[in-house]
Image (cartoon, rainbow, N blue to C red; front, side, top):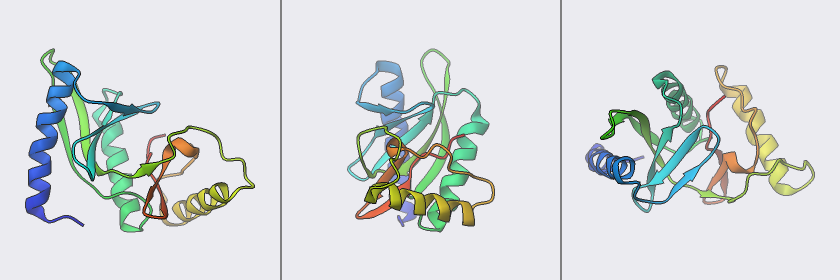
Length: 155
């Protein structure tokens, strides 16, 4: 999806922006239950875990990469660790920014959004044996154009 040279430039920018965020609390952050997202460009941002266990964000990264290969998730790359001025490690990866609903509501079942989400969940379950999309609510899906994708690979 992105040339290696562009990935390298974004990786350098990500480390700079994320370190400034952790050291100076700069930049708006979108947060969910276990992860946060810091936008670093128009098209990309950094997802970082509130969980100090590196394996959790690494597992989410692996699952998102696999889902991307099936067209079910945003593009992602560069799993890395940032250590802030207090010596706290933050586990991060770069991911494509998507349009979100801006809400965190359970799907009702009858509306169009719920039907599309149910289909997304079914396809994820068919193709990805290591991941089950059980936390399926409006805060964990996004859109790339008109295509719905999963944006949360926790749990």
